[in-house]
Image 1 (cartoon, rainbow, N blue to C red):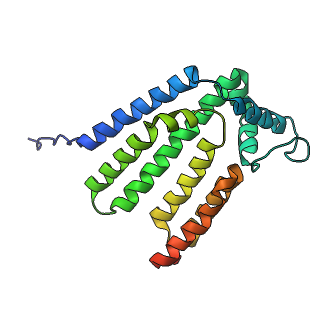
Image 2: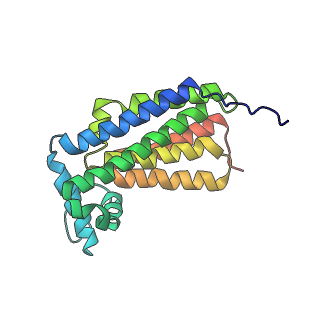
Image 3: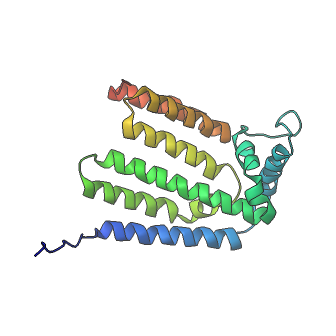
Length: 206
C-alpha cells in the first residue's frame, strides 16, 4: 500500500492575505466605477493620447511631470482608450495593485529571509494597510501619476531587497527609481536615499 498523502496545511495568514487581496480588487472596482471625477484625469489621459498620435511632450504640448506616464499610457492606448476615462482607471488600478504586491514582497523580504511565518505576516499587513486604505484605493485608481510611480518605486525597492549584492539588480533598481522620478518629479530623491541605505548597510554589489 502506498503511504497516505499528507494534506498541506494552509496558513491563516495566507487566507487573510487572499481575503485582503479580494477586498482590494473589489474596492478598486468600486472606485473605478463610482469614484468622483478628478479634473486632472482627462489632462493626463489627453497627454497619453497625444503621445499615441505621435506628439512629443514639452515640444508639442504642455506637460508638467516627467515623460514616463504619457509614454506608458500612450503605448497602451489601444487597450484603455476605447473605454475612455473608465479604461484609464482600469489600467491605473492594475498598476496600483501591482505596486501593492511589489511593496508587500519588499516587506516580506526585509521581515526575514529564513522565517516563512514572518514573511507571511509582513506580506499580509503590507497588502491590508496599503490596498485597503481609502485614500490609496481612490488615488491608485484615478489616472494620475501615483499608481505608476508607486509601481516603479516598489519594484526598485523589491530588487534591492531580493538580490542587491549583484550589479545587475542594483542597476535595474536604479533604472526603476529613475522611471519613478520620470513619472512623478517629487520622487527624484528615492534613488539617492536607497543607495545611501545600501552604503550604510555595507551592501556592495558583487
